[in-house]
Length: 127
Image (cartoon, rainbow, N blue to C red; front, side):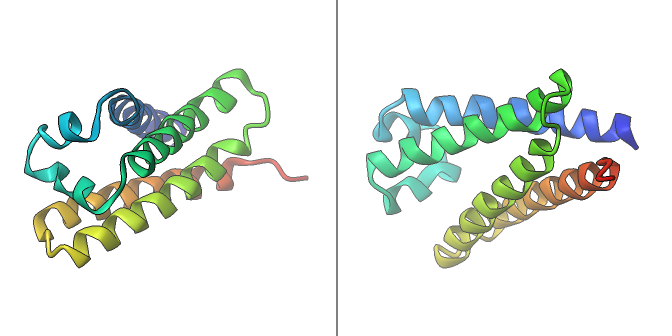
C-alpha cells in the first residue's frame, strides 16, 4: 500500500509541478496555446491563472517533501485534500463549459488525490 501511495504521489507531484510552473511562467495567451484542453483560461484573469499555478506547485511539493523528510508528514494528506478542492473547482469549470471529456480527466485526478489522502491519513500514527 505504501509503495502504491508513493508511486501515485510522485506521479501527481511531477504532473502538478510541471503544470503549475507552466501557469506561473507563461503568459495567459501562451498557456492557452497548448491545446483545446486549456481553453478554461478564458474564464480567468492572468493573475488568477498564476495563483492557481502557485497552488499547484505548493501542493505538489506538499505531496512528497514532508513524507520524504519525515518532517510533519501529516501535511501530505492535507496537501492531497487541498488539491482535491482545486480539482473540484476545475471539474466545476469543465461542467459549466460543457467540456465533458476533459471533465473525466479532472475527476480521475480528484479520485487519485482522494486515494492519497485516504491512504496517508490511514498510515498516520495519531497516538
